[in-house]
Image (cartoon, rainbow, N blue to C red):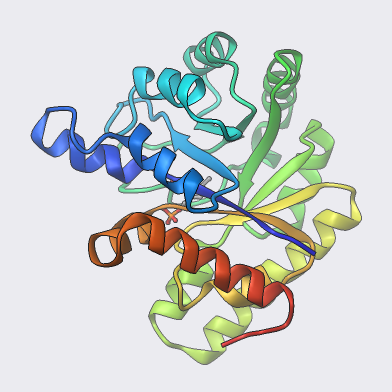
Length: 249
Ligand code: PXP
């Protein structure tokens, strides 16, 4: 019945990099998230290193006593870094230099052979691989065929529908996430979800029984400005666990 929370600390690094020094330290944020009940730490090493840097990844692996989920594009450069750092898991995402955040899921169906061999290499390093995909059944089938044991459903469209407070869109986007989770679990895939989740919109997603992990970043770090990081992580976990046991607010 339980559901895990992976805390994405990328935007602590965004804030640090805005001034060019070493404060605030994303590794310290990860420590605090761990002590507040996070079940894992997620960080996205982007090709342009706009937030997290190579050394952050090394320190997260060395200093934090939680599973490290290394988000990355499927490139040779990232493969080499993963082999050196040895994270618990990798989540493969599409990357586009001009995007503000990861705007859509990976097109697994369009590059299945390439991804299958990339997944084999990562698996050979002992890393558990997930693919970040939109809630589309053909992408889930392709993820299964490519040999991924885990998918992470992109909840960005659900988030946007919630932000627009459009009940029909919210219902449609939520139904797509739920259907995708059921379909993926039916194929034997482990199901995660994330992107754009907040205190307001997390509960319906957390209540989907097939979803065993949520990865949440921007909202938690933003909310930390007002309530502190430990409190924002604790509140998110409380909402998730309550949703799991049928207490929806
Ligand atoms: N999962 C993946 C694969 C992501 O790329 C991101 C964004 O970096 C998240 C989850 C978290 O999204 P958000 O920062 O909107 O909570």
